[in-house]
Amino acid sequence: MIIEIRLATIRHIEDLLPLVCAYHEFEGVVQDQQTRRNAVAEMLMTPDFGYIWRIYSDDQLAGYIAITLGYSIEFGGKDGFVDEFFLSTEFRGKGIGRKVLTKVLEQLRIDEVKALHLEVAQSNRRARELYEALGFELRDQYHLMSCQLEEMKR
Image 1: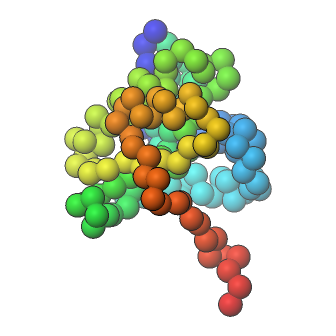
Image 2: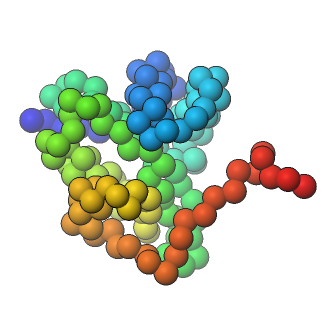
């Protein structure tokens, strides 16, 4: 099985949107189609925001991984966050996720990204074990918290 990650550009948006929609359905993310399209398009057209890689298994589109970029004083430079990582059902459980993350970590090292962060459901034991095997560490003393600014009360 040959696994490849190919950097997406705006011309790949029509291939990506059904996968993003499937991921959002899987995770219970509520978002209208236009907002989703706009968010994906903006990321694809703004390389400073990060990367979206299309995942191929034996030349078949299997999923995607989106890494957003930021900066961390604590980690000493550019850092990344696995914003979304999705494999279509028929590609799961075959070791593709491990291979994809290994390739992503290699590329991020080349691009001088100092740390990569992600969130994983506490109930997703298989994913946690994979991430730990690749060097991710649980930061138990911290909790990821989010505030949607558009919805903030003034």
